[in-house]
Amino acid sequence: MQSQQYDVVVIGGGVVGSAILRLLSFYRLKLLLIEKQPDVCEGTSKANSGIVHTGFDAKPGTVEAECLRRSRRLWPRLVEELKIPYLPCGAIMVATTEEEKEMIERVYLPNAEANGVEVQWVSREEILEMNPAVSPRALGGLAVPEEAICDPFWATRAFAELAVVNGAEVMLETGVAAICEEGDGLRLLLDNGGEVSTRYVVNAAGLWSDEIARMIGDDSFSITPRKGQFILTEEQVAISSIILPVPTPTSKGILVAPVVFGGFLLGPTAENQEDKWDRSTSHAGMEAVLSGCEKLIPGVRAFSTIRQFAGVRAVCSTGDFVIRPSACNARMIHAAGIRSTGLSASPGIAELVVEQLARAGLTLEEKNDAQQSLPDLFADERDKGEIVCLCRSITRSEIIHALTRPLPPRSIDGIKRRTGATLGECQGNCCIPRIIDLLDSRALPVKGLRHSYLGVKKERSSHDV
Image (cartoon, rainbow, N blue to C red; front, side, top):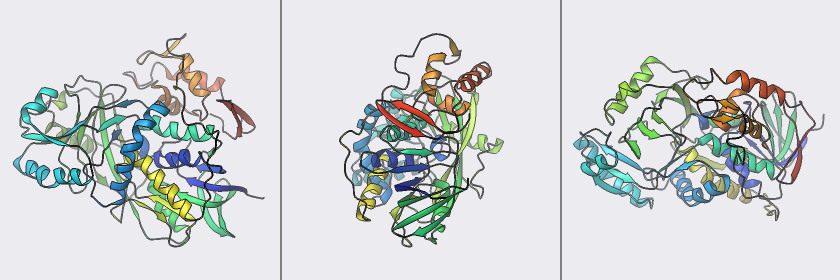
């Protein structure tokens, strides 16, 4: 069987891989993204705080700091073009002890200055005026006005959708089993028995990026999975900013942050583990979240919760992002070791990766007709017809619209992340049967589907829902 030929194959459909695919789609290239899960954003990218960090606390001179610096410039335009739900609420790193205050003054103030991020010290009185729920034990804090919140799934989906509109292909539910050198490129053997050939590979496989690297004999870094458990509440919490603790050596710490669609997020923990698939929550983890949060917001133990969940982030042995060609084969560009700031840094990571590909010999010829933006996810479908999700007032039209996007959902979770259905108080108990009916009525054939969107017609394969 002859393999399909591509210029670049991106392995990994998280926010980093999707951001890279979007940027590459502005050039005349044959592109493919391979993701082993049934949807994009099924790994680390979907289970995080949703914070768009400025990088004020990144170690100066690191690759991470450079990616965050670039991303600060790029985010405003991305939010506008991709209609990403975005809350520019700012953040305050709260000091509750003299030691924490000294740490902020000695480390984080000069660190932010070195990274070019605007910060300022605020008094206890100023913190409580803006955020009355914060502990009166606060001695003051570091205000970071440019920190923000966004929807990480929306950003990931929008990056991937725009790439599809511009001609890129997305292959879901497909893993990479092996990689072989082939002439002036690489051949990828897939776990479904297929194979593809490509001139370049971008390794954006997240927790599995070290395993992808080893497929070409590269053991220059390793990934340790670190679990973070979260609690989601819809209680009314009297804060207007992201409330940050002073970080620890292993984590940015347990924080309290608004959620862009309403409610508040508490967490995460930082638990090293061996199992990259383990996203379970535990009583001990929930206790750690509450214990950490009550130092910042007294009374969190009384909050009702609508969901607890966990994400697993990739901790790299190098201590920094790995964005470079592999020493074993320069046709593989690593975008690996992306830990806590992957969402925030993804636009800058994409820029660096594209620059690395150009240095490796990839010709970049811009498309004159490339789309730069996407319309609103729901367009004019809000408030039309039958309400399917009573908790969130999501209509049948909104769900049907989501099912006809360039990258349609194939599951209830996919509907949830695109529309907000099932995210309310009942957690889907009332609306899931109707959503299943809609998914079934829109089930896509295994292959041969032709989809026209924004005047761009393309063929892609899909799977039954």
